[in-house]
Image (cartoon, rainbow, N blue to C red; front, side, top):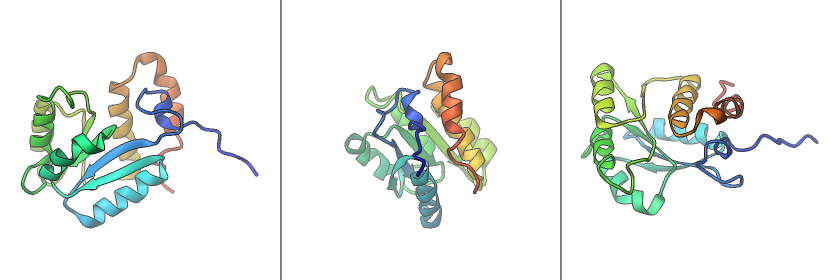
Length: 162
């Protein structure tokens, strides 16, 4: 029996310890997308917590303390871009990596997300390879160049299309 000896992704990016998964807070209004992303991320050594709207995200952030926020731009009550803008003004969450999921207004949302301080954007619908690239981009921004090669080797097995 062969054991998987590949360490968790965040060992090299300073987000988590060896035995602790990457904590992802996922906020999207679509139940099906939340379920699919939860399943995909859970298989990729992530602990996924979900929220239904931006207000829910802001209320739960102090309790949940995620390592990364994956949030849709078009949420009810308070959109993902608005949430990102508020987080960038908060000393407690200014450095929280934020990945915005954009919808039908992708170009406009991408520009607005960049202005709000998002780390990356991902246009829906997307493939697991694109999610992997977006996570890689966000994590790369949070690590030094010396860990880049090791981070890439760890990402190789994650989010692969099966």
